[in-house]
Every structure is written in structure tokens, then in C-alpha cells.
Image (tube, rainbow, N blue to C red):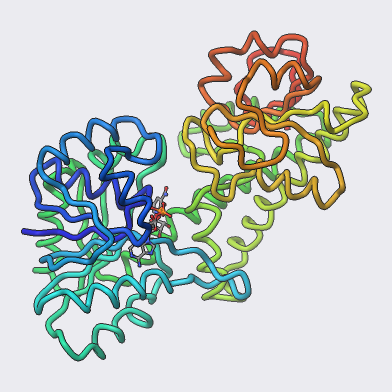
Amino acid sequence: MRVNVIGLGYIGLPTALMLAAEGTEVVGTDINQSIVDKLNEGSVGFEEKGLQELFVKAKQNNIIFTTKYEKADIYIVAVPTPYLKKDKKVDASYVKNAVDLVLDVCGNGAIIVIESTISPGTIDKQIRPLVRNHEKVNDIHLAHAPERIIPGSMVYELEHNNRTIGADEESIGEEIKKLYRTFCKGEITVTNIRTAEMTKVVENTYRDINIAFANELAKICRTDGLDIYEIIRIANMHPRVNILSPGPGVGGHCISVDPWFLVGDYPGLANIILAARKINDSMPEYVLERISEIMDDNGIDSASRVGLYGLTYKENVDDVRESPALQILECMKRHLARGVKVYDPYIHKNIVKNQYQDYMEFLNDVDMVVVMVGHDHMIRNMELLNGKVVLDTRNVCNRIDVYKL
Ligand SMILES: NC(=O)c1ccc[n+]([C@@H]2O[C@H](COP(=O)([O-])OP(=O)(O)OC[C@H]3O[C@@H](n4cnc5c(N)ncnc54)[C@H](O)[C@@H]3O)[C@@H](O)[C@H]2O)c1
């Protein structure tokens, strides 16, 4: 069994390594030459617990990294699926491009598994026609195996999460299940493609709505001087209540993106989903208002004395995609409030203005710290925030005098 994994980013790379480490013959393909070069030089490219060890095991089992698509029995496509800004529908162009290139090299009978998150109906409407109209190959099977792993715990979750596989025929579903079973200890459900597509988007939308509820409650509680965290803590003691935490906004490549697919595809029907998206997208602006209030309270009159701690979209990862901190910096630009300082221990290259690489220098240059991300690094060094005005948007600081959302 030979597998060609297409796209070696946050999802494709760990998947390719996991398969290879467990003995499958794997070729990993990415169109980005520098990603392939780095992998061939021995660097995995991003920080993730257990990834380097997995890389070593996969290399021992002769995994290949290349920019070329290769002949294989199964293709796993893990390329980006952003949404189109104009109508909020899924942008399936990367997936279509990848499938086209697979069809040029694959033989009859190959299976193409789309791992990328796609909106319900994408395979039928946009991918199946490519396969049907291709002249050279026939008997190609399509499947969907969406991924649920979370950055920061990817290797563990690859092994332990339950998975969903959507296929046209049960026998194909079972064949793919056998492949994932080489490393996955979780339950693997085989269903049809449209159900698998919808299920994945529904999972992320559920979390987005739950977070929006928490964010709305945070705003309500603020107007009445109530402690939202205490209220959620007590409410969650109810056996059937599980409210997630409020925060400075929702970032990342999944929760802030996938609900838009439903809004785009079901306009007029996806009402709670749209409202939740708007609430979560309003949070960076809300944090900005809190910063301004707290600056006034403390006589801080210049944004240059304010520092954002954390640029990533969640704790202990180096992924900044759609991050609330970047959204706040954008808002500040619009409000002509420039000069805010920034520090993130996971971002070793300066990607925004006034970004520091040294934590102490950063702290020396600010009077107020806005905790945007609860990295362990900050929690371990909490005492360094003594003497600073702190706005903690993640509820991770244990000092009683910190400001909250
Ligand atoms: N990152 C996550 O936490 C996460 C979790 C679950 C699902 N997903 C989904 O997985 C998919 C991939 O996400 P990601 O985070 O790995 O993206 P990514 O941007 O980290 O990686 C995608 C890779 O695909 C490569 N690529 C693009 N077009 C290609 C092509 N035609 N041929 C070969 N390589 C190509 C890019 O160079 C890039 O390295 C998306 O649909 C995403 O929604 C992501």
C-alpha cells in the first residue's frame, strides 16, 4: 500500500509522518519548495509536541518529501480551504487544483481522500465532475476524512480522537478505515460523503456558537458588574450545561472559518450561526474598548505604553492565522492608535510593528499588559507582571487586581 499525502502543513505533515511511522509507504508532496527543502534538511517547520520524534521514526521508515505528485494507491489531500470573502462560501480551488494534479498521475482504481474541511456538497458539486470528466483514468473513488486535531496536541489527538470517514461504497470506506486504523485508536465511523462533510462543519459551528454565547454573557455581565467566570463555573456544575470560555475573539483555521460555509450555502437559514460569527468577530473591537477604559482609569495616555502579550490564536502554539491579536492590531490601525508593543514567545520572527523578541525588554517598555494568549510561558513567569496594569482576556492570571473582559 502506497500513500501520497498532498499538502504538508499543520494537518498533512503529522498525518503523513504518523502513517509512515506506523509502517505505511508514504510520499509527502507540497507545492511549496521551501517546505519540502526544510523537511529534507530535517526540520519539521513548526512547533508541535511529539512531532520531531514522529519525524525521526518516519524518516527511518523512508518517508519521501517532494514537490511532485506520485503514483499511489491512496491520496490524502490536506490543502487549505479558506472561505471566499465576497459570498462566504468555501474556496475549494486548492482542493480542485490538487485533485486535478492527482488525476494526472494516478492509476485506475485509486482512492482520493479529501481531508481538508469542505462545506456539505463540495465533493459532489466541485470535485466529482473533475473525476468524471478526466479522460485518462476511470474507477477513481472519492472519500472524505475530515480532521479534528487541535494544534498543541496534534500528535496525541491523531492517535486518540474518533474519526469520520465518508465514502460512496462501504468497501472503500472500510479500506480507508483500515489505513487510519494503523495509527488511530479512536472509534472510526464510516458514513456517506455528504454526512461526513456536514458533520465536520457542524462540529466547529457548535463550538463557535457556544463561544459566542460566552462572549455575549461576558458583555452582559460587564454592564452589571458581575463575574462571568464565576457564573460560568457555577452554571457548568449543572449536569447538562457546558458553557465554553469567553475570550478576545476566535481565531485559527477552523472555528472562525467553517461556520461561514453554512452561512454562505444556506443564507436565510443559518441565523444563529451568522449571529455567533458576528459576536465573535466583534470581540477584538470590544477588547480595544476595554483597553481604552482601563488606560483612562490608570492615567495611561499613550498606546505606546500598552503591550499585547500573545500573537497566536491559542496557547502554546505558533499559529497566528486569524488570531484575535492580529485583528486588534488591525482595528488599532483603523482607529489611528499605533505604537502598541507586542510580544509572543512562540513567534521568533518579527511579523508586526513594535514586536519584541525579549520578554524583559518588552515589559520594561510598557505600563499595561493585555494578555491575549495564555501561553504556559506567561503563567510560569506570572510574578514578572507585578507592578503592571493587566487586562487578562483569557482568565489565566491569578492576581486579584487584574482587569477582565
Ligand atoms: N490547522 C488545523 O488546526 C486544522 C484542523 C482540522 C482541519 N483543518 C483543515 O485541514 C486543511 C489543511 O489545513 P492546514 O492547517 O494543514 O493548512 P496549511 O496551510 O498549514 O497547509 C496546507 C499546505 O498545502 C500546501 N498546498 C497548497 N496547495 C497545494 C497543492 N495543490 N499541492 C500540494 N500542496 C499544496 C501548502 O503549501 C501548505 O503547505 C484545511 O482544510 C483546514 O481547514 C485544519
